[in-house]
Length: 562
Image 1 (cartoon, rainbow, N blue to C red):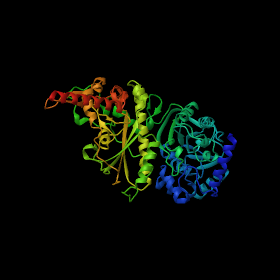
Image 2 (image 1 turned 90 degrees about the horizontal axis):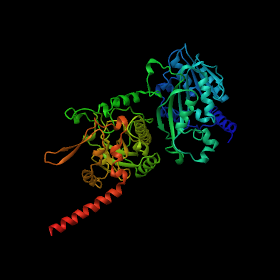
Image 3 (image 1 turned 60 degrees about the horizontal axis):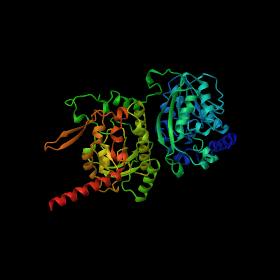
Image 4 (image 1 turned 135 degrees about the vertical axis):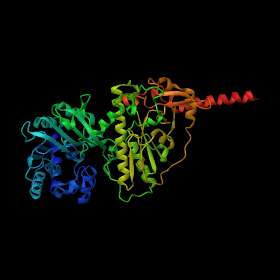
């Protein structure tokens, strides 16, 4: 496929959308005005924002709301790449005021004409629309304060040139906020070769890390994904499910940042409010803010926050809960839900009731839970505690969080109500919830041990109003605690002595997990996992060995009695 052929096809498709001779859209899930408005809301535009601009400016083509995250200020000059009907230009114009200016660039004549007509109809004096390609912007050097773009850069075959152009026209200390589509995993070759898929935002999407590297190579600093969600468009090709991600990327030209946005983690990225919150939780070297060096007397079990590592996480769902949710689910829907979850990397799914003893929040929760597990990669397990291990650990938490929000959106879009328990949060005791859902049993390390993953899993949950989830009482894995009491390798492996043997009132031995000492959340420590026989040998191997040992003991006891 040649670059010109791709551009010509994309240009023709978007010309038809602009002139309303093609009612379909490239990155949306509905047709007609109601569907367009619904799609706009689903990617982050509020009702007030939609009402504040000309209706004809909204085509439902975006994958985010860059104006909501770009922190646009009065008097600034803003450039919108691929401005379409002008939705983001007009929202930005409302923010910059009469002393500012917003320029929209689009390669489609019909879109520029439509946007210009919308500006005239809306009485906008501080906007301008120009015909041009993002690889060759009709803009002067060093003239723009903020550059935004919404699901457009994925449409160009030459993203490297596009970002170099963006860098050229941006002022020193200027910033970009790009909403775009990226991939995580290989796309089928026939999708990559499809002109239609190019125009629908998928074929031209880069792998996520390559996309970020392209921005950095163009000269930008502090390149950071500040929000991301799996792309969950209705009727999405099954081969693409779990591989397409909508991202909001922020980056700077130069090192200067406004007083409201200072601080960069390790000199690489600007911290979002969520990252700042996570940093506060472990900056002192202990999970949940503990220092890891308290005396026995100072350690108080009531201070424990449960795994995840603590903190509240704002709901990042794209789909709102329905006003009148259904509460009875069809078995076929659950099959589809589980297929969708597995396609995104979820290993195990369990269902259970939520009991008060497991909840660490005063917030009213839905009564039933869908429990999800994701595998911790071998890179996390093998990397020694420290910044690199912590980064890998946090990335897995973030990935599971994004998957959980996408699955929550899937449920909400089908008429049910949900609440997400982010895996890094402290809303619920995740290991206990996983045990109650029958996914495994809690070992002496305090971690859930499951047949599929042993102890190397992250856990999240979706609370829901669905009343007929397939819940069963499970105790098939209860033998694990007996094995763990005889093993004790995790206790010896812990360098921080977060697992302590104590005597019970009846002379027995108990294991206390002191989460304040655990450095799993602060340094990515996984020694207790790495040394666990369930991780080394696997669930079935350990179970068979345990059963044989018990059989020999029973035989020996039987002979002694006779």
